[in-house]
Length: 140
Image 1 (tube, rainbow, N blue to C red):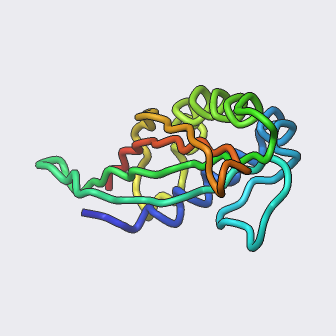
Image 2: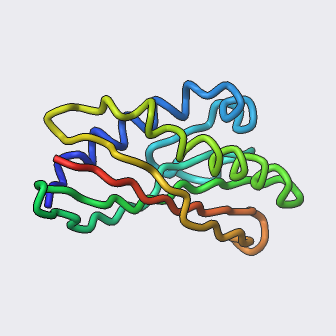
Image 3: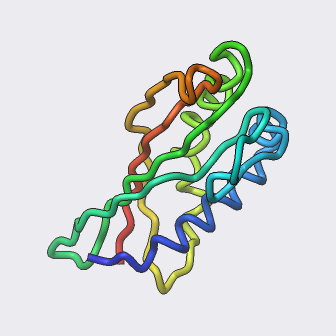
């Protein structure tokens, strides 16, 4: 198993997201690799948890990275958070082509798949949150 691609994958994914003009417009540029301290107003996107599973086989080392992108919004309804989530569900799997050139020493990104999303109210109903789960396959 190789965990070596984790940092490179996160950095490349972050750069991909901040380069997307629609994501930047929907979030007001609030794309973070860590949850902002305190209560953040507006809508923002946070690169969340990651779990890595060994997917080595006869062809060599490999890993499946399961990661979460969290959309948080203090808007009155779910519309704003779901608009960001809908965009992510489309562009992140397509990011595999753009992210294929992550640090070559860390491995080669084969594909990214959208797994599922969970929408819920958080912080006593003051925040709408959508957690999107993705799977990324890295070889090498």
